[in-house]
Length: 440
Image (tube, rainbow, N blue to C red; front, side, top):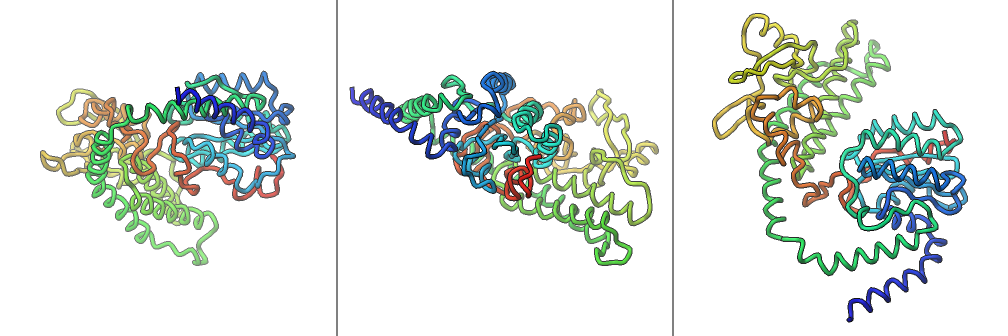
């Protein structure tokens, strides 16, 4: 009898406090609502996003099953625009994509594991340019694209109550949230096994350490390429385009080193190899400018060894022991070797059976390869190989464990305030909707 009385008292307290809390801090109310559904509209912002449009937007997000959050707030609300997005992300505590219409301004951000910084900036800019002055349309346009591109799944808490897109139901969101917290508190000890968690953490660390030597070799090789190219930004022959290429390559190198130094899960290796691949393409572009040659086409790296740099063409190839021919991107040197009937210069890694090409080294190399070639391209390249057959396993791309022990959160996972603002795409630091608050 004690628990029902406690729950009732909490619910009554929430009902009494909700109006005051909503008036005092609409961001808290928005966060409480977003834990139960993807869209929140402050009652004073219904002119920005009418109820029918909010309901349609909520239905679209829920149907897609992606961790995308949309909020409409009135311009009169006194928020610090430079930290609004970060504060909302902290209060909701769920890894995902966050889009906010504030009066006639709009901006968005996302955790890098859900949507890349470039994608956030491109989608935000496109929405702002397409609907100048209409933040509701910007919000809808952005969400339409984000649900197609975002990674991860909708938060599990969305299944625990009805979606509440309108601010008028903010109190209901608080009630549901309190109820969920009580239930989780009572049943949590029955659902969580510390022994299982420890085992998963140990396996995560072991797989990361298996990858570390290969990734460190890639970073070192990339650093040597930066030195070899011998570019001097202060040289009279250097122009702005060259300096931009070089800066991007340097930034990629530093980002790769930093992420790998802090990595605690195999999943983070994808971010490292993505950065290295991007940096190598920037170097290839810089070298072409320096030599007065045509700029290279943006292509995947050489399949046989990404250290060879961007590929120059596609070739048909069948791996040893397989009958499945496939098309793979190759560098010029490996294309010449194939023309001569020779085996390409494959990247080999250590395995229990000795040195083997990475595609025959098993699922541990999924995160490493997916950073170079992307999750969509990879299965076709690796069909019939040991790594290819493992891509449908729980270990594919390092995603098996979901939220790991040290902030390794995928889309829709609850992280609370445990996230790196520097890894949260979208630049609210420069102002909401631009440095001049221009809204478009």
